[in-house]
Amino acid sequence: MNSPNSSSSKIVNLKPKIDKDTLRPIRIWIPAERINMKWANYSNEIKAHMRALIEVDQSKPGTSLEIYNISTGQHLATYTAVVGGIKSWHSDKMRFLLRAERRSKK
Image 1 (cartoon, rainbow, N blue to C red):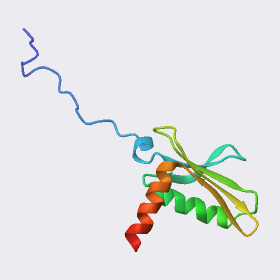
Image 2: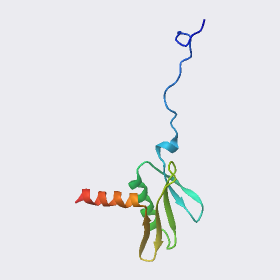
Image 3: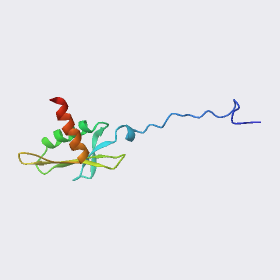
Image 4: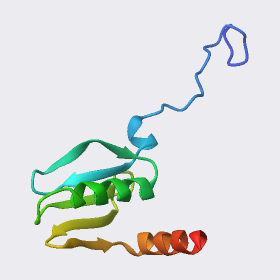
């Protein structure tokens, strides 16, 4: 007789399935082309913001990049290149993180 406690029962793999989307859920989106930026998947929001700022700083005026989290669907920020600088919009969560980052460096 096969009972659940017998030694002949199946061995179940209890390791969770790791998906690359759960490891690096922060993405940079190019709205003009309607695609994600290649090789721009991040686990840390600050690193994603720094990459977006660098890319927008080196691009032509009018270029926009958006940062979002695919696991929650939250739009985190938008950066747009303008003549003489960068115009930005941040979610409330990101404003809090940036303020905390500035305070910790002082």
